[in-house]
View (spheres, rainbow, N blue to C red):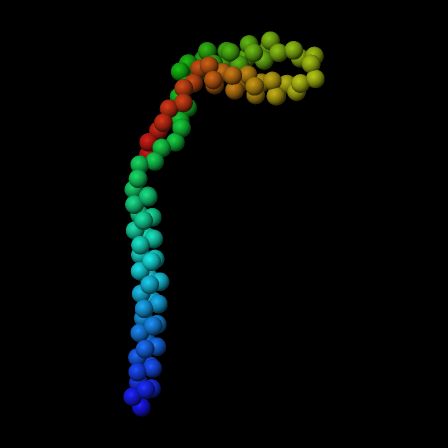
Length: 96
């Protein structure tokens, strides 16, 4: 009878130890995740200075493009827009 009782107690002890390890590791993971969430994060934000000049540049660039070439018109306008962003906009870090 004593052997059976010791076996049951040992089994319960192992089960409790396993549950303790599982939930203990989960708590540590959640605490680490909370620390990461509270860290200051940032992303790049584009700030354009003069949108009127930028729009004028895009229109003039599209007019100056060679319409007789084999390039698609919307591809040329897209490249003009990208160029205007590089000329008239600054990329800054925005913290949130």
